[in-house]
Length: 229
Image (cartoon, rainbow, N blue to C red; front, side, top):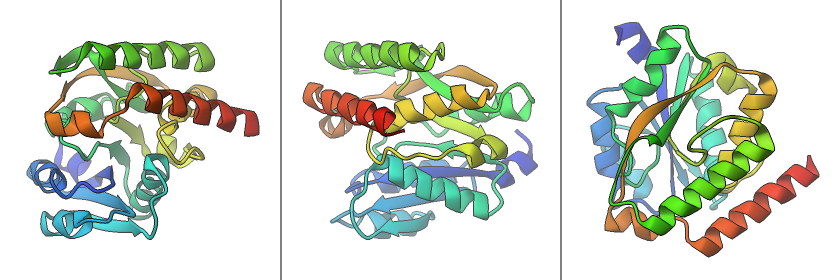
């Protein structure tokens, strides 16, 4: 990975009430990547101050708007600061900083405009059978609605060229944004590849994750958003 790529890659982390995890997440990333942006999405705890103390640039929503809205805020800011590559990364400690290089490599090599991380091409740690079933069902639904041949539609690890990131218009503020992003990538005809990544599930991250009812709400949000478009 060249120094130029590192200097022009910006990592965007949406965060809501993540004071327990965000410090370690930012510190792990900052050891490898200079530009880390945390969007504090109306947290009621010390997420913003912990992220700032750990070295991140912090943006704040006055109220909780949802992960999709936080990503759009962070991506827009990264582009304004001159980002040539934008990476999205979760705030709960599930992702590994070293996987960012895996995401960025196909872009650096000129093979892709968008790179999606896939836990099903890579590996997982402590993922429950129910979580795996829900994720595979969500992926099958996304493949059906978008036509994109993805293996993992709801993975927070993604990388975009500047041009691809500039075309994103995330309108679904909450978790349905993950399928919306894949839709937009397909519509824009961007060169998209998947790469294997590792996702680690801890007791903390599992408590923060989607339930079966939550997944149903995501589906309704997505369908409602498509109908409005």
